[in-house]
Length: 570
Ligand SMILES: Cc1ncc(C[n+]2csc(CCOP(=O)(O)OP(=O)(O)O)c2C)c(N)n1
Image (cartoon, rainbow, N blue to C red; front, side, top):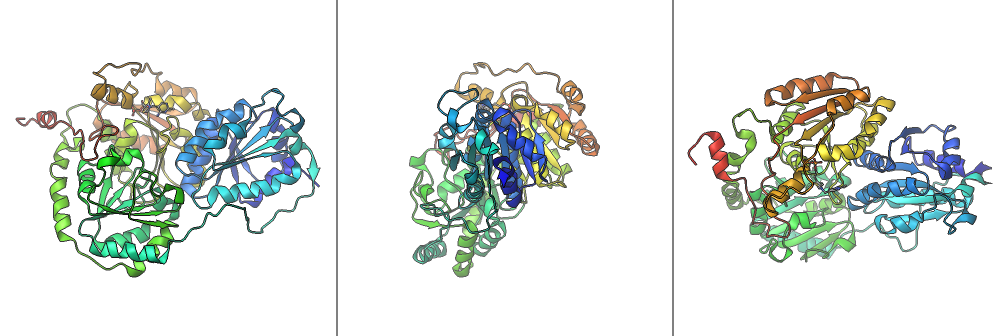
């Protein structure tokens, strides 16, 4: 006989879990008490949002399921932002919450919240468990659902009395079968044939590398396909690293803050092969004018994404790896010289406008920090970004050649994600050099997790891109709201002192020349280091497609100001 609390840990150990991120409280105390008997490391977070992001960061870095644990009521509701973040980016996490005892449910008992109700739309699935016998099988299903098909978060809410009561428990290895849940799909032969026909005839194709390529570990196959077809590859934000950024066929990022020439190329392409991506509005701009000349092939594991935003000519529903393997079996080599010549023209003056190429004028630009971090870490760091301008600059200037080395909140755009997600990634990748890149705003949303770093003895490097503003919102105010900076200037704490208060090292950089020294000092330190980069306050991310505008209609860095800074006559 085992208590329900013991069964929770037995089931987790059986699933191969060796670390969980959580915060205790009344309704989950039996589980915490039983935890001491099991070989699972518990990381005590400072806010349950952090626990969910840590589980998410762990999952994204490792490809395994991350686990967060919290008590009922406020503990459970604090998980919500992290669960929604995982949902929008298809990240496999299992959240276990305590619930008030079953007889009290519905009585507004102390710390009672209907968390299965609250999380219904932001979980792939959720459960309320009221009997100890259900705990083992439910957790087994939860892990299966989280990682199968299109991955996502699953919440298991377990009443306190179910944790306290006992029953027999034997872990099962039988395959999980659930009525109505069919996560596996395989592209149909006739659709593959049709796709190969379109590929054979295309003169101006582009492959799109989405998050699904990273998740499926399909990067090598996509490279083979791109080289065979001589097709250029554009990436979504979450697809970065899925295809090597330094490969000659790599175009870089598409979408709102993608390269202008890449977006223009999409508008001129005659075939798009979208691999594991979902045509998010940040990628397409105005759907009415999106890629008007292109036939579209959509390779996607989730059938509900097909035709959701963009009508496609061929849908290949299935795992990206399997589907690209099937395409490779029939894809014919191509050259497409004229298309590559056209792309070179489109690329045009992009380099001239690039701020990184400007001479050092004494100002510290965020782009310099990203570029130097890329250079100094030789592109090998695992970078976890927060949300805002710095996120886009990182995507533009840190060239990722490897999958799972950029972790960022794409779909939900959750400020406060980076530091906790990096802590989770630290457990997945104990030997990686990890850099958190965050804004001064987002950092303060979850900076209390510095305490977690200190208590757990964790090493991450935190680069705060400190522009004294909620930068991305300030940029929109500058472009679209007549420079009325409503509620975007920030009066920040002294981040160096804040690090010090946590018993950690803090550094400050105000000049470009000082970046390498600070990076070296941060790398040399054993514990977590916070580097406060005081960057240009009113710089903007260029280029930009205004929300809902045509993809080919980008705001570019004003050439006049660029030439003026270069000392040329505008
Ligand atoms: C939790 C949350 N609240 C609000 C927003 C809206 N938002 C998007 S970017 C941004 C500004 C971010 O400022 P900062 O963290 O300083 O980064 P920067 O843009 O300056 O690089 C805001 C407020 C958000 N994405 N997430």
